[in-house]
Image (tube, rainbow, N blue to C red; front, side, top):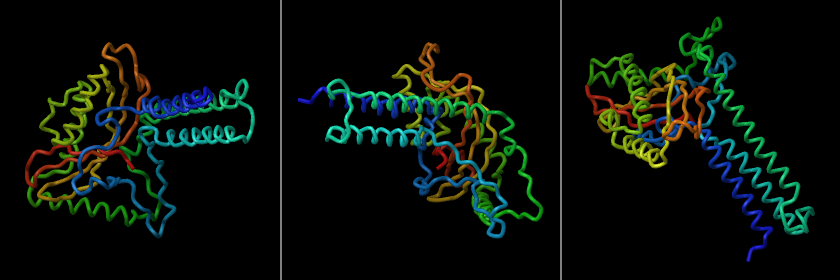
Length: 320
């Protein structure tokens, strides 16, 4: 039989892990695809999509390009790692005390002591504070002024020339588009980006309705199965993921290639929106916020048989 002390310790550890894995996960905004990577990018499925703006600096002017801020990791991976370390510290402390190292404890040494209670309270307060801080930052980044680079080119210093890596990336995209035009002479890059943006809005609309069948022809079999399965799961939980005030700030081609008789194009989409989940009565907000806009970027990959054929969404990926 387990002693009352170890039962209390077990409940405490379970509560902390529940908070880390469930409560923090609620802070991750859902939208179509659940804010995670899914679908197929052909032979590139196991590699991260290339960002058109994430290119190495020129060897001759390494200090000329300002470093970009890393995108926040969706799903709270950092927080789970930090909290996991703290939980590990608590467990270690308990084990040391159980072996006779250190004293304290509850009444008669058989329960949770003041130190554990204070430490748990500090951890939970720290996690709550960090979540609030993340939400305030998301609201601040939703200001249109923060998207100046989406519509205006970054001023270049006199004598600065684009990096070799950027030229190489552009060359690969141009080469890929050239191959596509060999079998589809009418292919237009801007028209494709407009179609990608239109697909983005339609997918989000179908997702909010929890029914992807209206856009079935726009999706490959694999990504349709994933999105429709997620939508059915929301229905089972009697929840609705509501997406409002969607604003796409940038759609930029990041990769173009051909393989196995198919064309592939990946675009980087930068957008912001209100993303929150409610019950079916629209009374209780389960996760997200009705007032704090979320800025994000995702990579959407489209594919089709080589030639002048309709494009279909095949994958949604998060930045690495």
